[in-house]
Picture 1 (cartoon, one colour):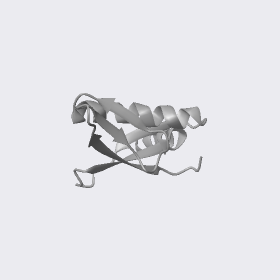
Picture 2 (cartoon, helix red, strand yellow; picture 1 turned 120 degrees about the horizontal axis):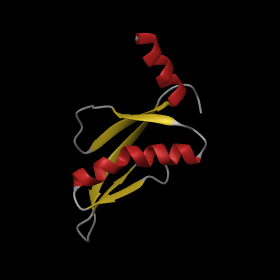
Picture 3 (cartoon, helix red, strand yellow; picture 1 turned 30 degrees about the horizontal axis):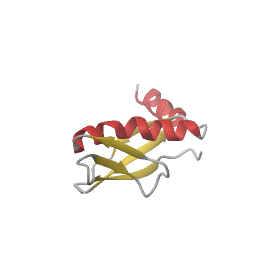
Length: 90
């Protein structure tokens, strides 16, 4: 993985059975289900981390607010880059 953050846009859709599903056009394989939209959103950061880790990349995941209620961006930051940034501000 490059040494920069990657943006992962995530959207929630309501399924026919009443479940809510989070998915992303930017991260293949991302699918989180919940009985409410909030429950689905809560599972997104861990799902992003797990998908990157499966590819051998440890990341820190934070939500990047942009005001779009239909789609939320998340930033997947390489863990070593995040650690260096935190150490630099201490």
